[in-house]
Image (cartoon, rainbow, N blue to C red; front, side):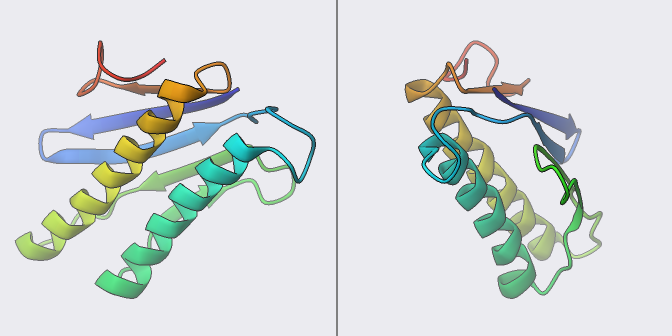
Length: 118
């Protein structure tokens, strides 16, 4: 199971951490793993290419199954808002996957507790 934990501060999302493997299918055919990877990597690329920020990412490239995105503290309010919007869209997309594939992905986020997560 992929476990997603969203850490929030007073200003919004501070960190998104993902651990585990979906194991929803054979290697190369796991649609949950593919969806989760596409969402997180797509939004990290958007932060870099659209906002000009280098995301603070820690991940296990050898075995996979671990990624942590620490959002940057920014002094530019407009840039901060855009970074937060991309992070929130990441969480919303992961929550949507968990609604249909809750056996394979769990999202924990204080903002959405009791909402659309498994």
